[in-house]
Length: 251
Picture 1 (cartoon, rainbow, N blue to C red):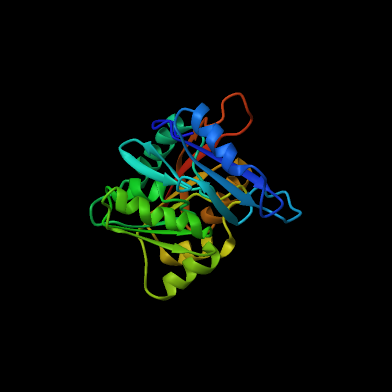
Picture 2: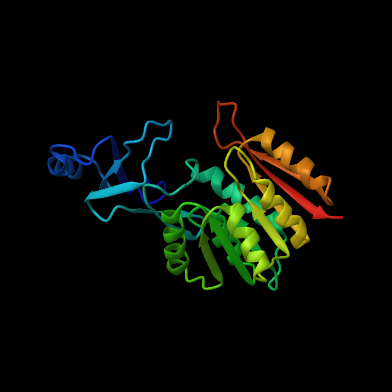
């Protein structure tokens, strides 16, 4: 459910390619759910702990909803990552933007960018932003979101961060500010090594796992990046989980 728009997406996950009565279900949802926009069948036949499969069949609507963070609008599809606490998301992203200390000539790498949420916040201040994300559907959404918000100083690349970031650096793309927002397992060592080689002035690390954050901060500290400030943000009240934003400087 879009927090600000109240648009509703329903995603059914099945271990087959079809389910009976989907069109009838769409009609019932349309009649009974205010704001209902789209029904999607997600196909996941794999025996895994991953909930969503890679294939989606749109049953009703266009398979997407919109939501806002601050003044920015984002188009969201079933495989996109979008924070579930929109009020605290704005707090989190504004803190990341504050720590980046951006000026108009700065170039930024936003690594593990998802649908471009942080990238677009950064693009409002920086000269150029490069976003990197492994999920292709998220990158498609990120490109659409840049257009929706009339931001033309952002480029997005799909692929594994540990492959794409070193390749971009070898090809001459560089940044003086780096933002990283990795999954719970933290950053791949190749990503951290490339950041160190790139020698940005500032690194902003957004983390959903304090233990891997501590590991990666220690790795960067040994290679010339001092953590000067950390701000936890409670995204999941009444749970043990916390998001954390760390500001690092090259010394």
